[in-house]
Image 1: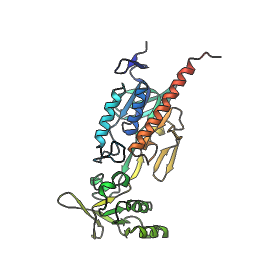
Image 2: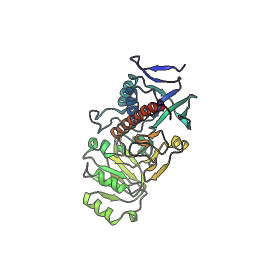
Image 3: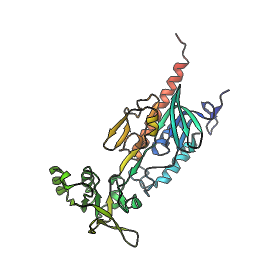
Image 4: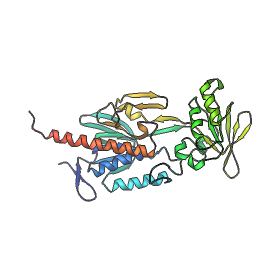
Length: 328
């Protein structure tokens, strides 16, 4: 007889053996936990597989999330885990290393040796930021080396900004951060002056952004562990207290590739082709958060997880109802 799983109130919310779920969510960040919360409240037997690698781990606080502005990311995730547990959602600290399609759904293998099955699968595996290989950048990322002015611009407003160019798109970043400070210097680093268009130069001039050619050799930090400057390879130092960089975004697409999802090359990395709700080209497979788009902030990722989960619940409901109808 199939084992009945119950939530904390004792209500039946799903059926199957210990390794069979209605939905498996891979990724325990904002998107994955939001999806799990909706599914748990919908009484769906749900498992979250969390490798514990949130993208915003280097940041002390997260901003721009209404009612959660300034909350430490670790505290946000801990609260999310407590919330999903109230609705009987299971969370396992492990890494999904292999996934395959089978009749009725999916099979997912975990690094710890466990194998689970699901009727629907949500991949909320996020992405990893690959930082420019400049001494000091990785060590100070999330402190005074930043990437997103919407995330951190207010906290460092009116300070002396440096922007470390890694591509022609860095001009856009320099122009954007000038909204938060009128003292902005664009260090071209590996970008040639000839790569800047006339429009780039006009806009930079209009925004008051200084342009410095030459490769950057490293960051200058004082004895109080404060960023104080940017040092060029020739030894010239420019006083700066904040540096913005543009990491190379590396979406975690291994499971998507294994499952045969169609992927799309973008200027920001390789992402799955999805509909407006996160459904990939593989039936029953959804992507949410930074696994689906590089532009998702925490609040957007949570929204994407909510949207995917609500649609999955409806799919499962009508699938089960139709399965019980008399066959012609």
